[in-house]
Image (cartoon, rainbow, N blue to C red; front, side):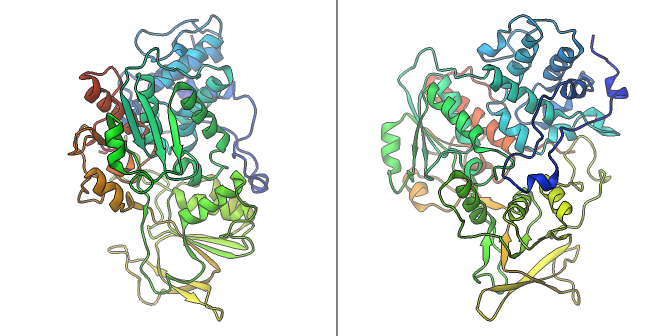
Length: 517
């Protein structure tokens, strides 16, 4: 057997990343290429195979973490049991392993794909609340669940285990999905595989939503997205890009031509910063900036109209989008980059008020922060509230003014104001919900809830028969695992609406929320 005491004898070791200075010379993913065994197998062996695994509850997808950890660990230990796949745990032909050690990698892939349509995305983009809920994290270092997941997902693609799975038969029912982010893509894939003719409408010129234009290539190389889209097409899902439902195609036409409609338009309404100078040239929303950087990577233009090259840059915000702006600005050779986070600096370990197994707010450094430190690009300032933008003689942005934030209400503390030279300021303040769209909402009869999201019941259905809402459009800004879980769940709801029953998995209800204590 694999070492059952590995959690005690084997230290946590994360997947190796390329040198930070090297990474700044290209837009490729940050990980060092090459085989991951025995690293991944040894790390998977640290899993305690808990009788009550909290990592399941922490992930809305309900990923079968201990199962695929055990299979990978046993492969590395050379004691695999070929064909060790339990009944009813996988949805695909990937659950039919061949003999030999590779069979257990295939079995691990079957476990992973049984709950997650896109593990190659979550393994790269999710902050891994499952690791925070690992039992080892109570007083030590969690299993590197995210690294193991990614290794299995990439191996599945390399070996052809995650191939197209078109339905054996179709039932003649048609479903329209509006939006091609992770929720829309997951819903479309589940519905197509269930035998429904599914068409995805995307207002952008390419499918993918924020995966396409919001995530920089150093976090997700776009050939991985294209590969997954090709799989959906080969299974039978149709895509219509550059089509804004409500304007280019009236929503009534969709309702007349389809048996059900899923609205998965995301939460792209950006938070604003109503301070003096906000309208100055040089002050931009982060997503505008990231979209242009991604379009350069796609080959749409050689030089983005909004660039950090040679400029002093200030990023307002402390989340993942702010970190993506940081890594992008460094690769564009900014003169300096300063990040202003209105929140106080979190502790390095769990605070007493955030006990295990919840996902705590602790101090974390992304790969972009690693890169910033390597070239001394600029500080990361906590408890900083932005109070205004100043213009130079040419009328463009010349400086950002900020002050220390009062802990109680985040208001500027008197006498602490400072001034940062800046020719580019990026607002990465998060999103409030779906963008107001009078055409789509009015034509479909959609209502808006008190939080600005589209109203729906606990089964993802709106008040309009046959119209459903999934993803951030109904939940609000959230993690990619929640988007995929909602896409899978809404597919089951639609399937039940069309057939009167369903065999599709339903990982969550619309009212489900992140695991808290």
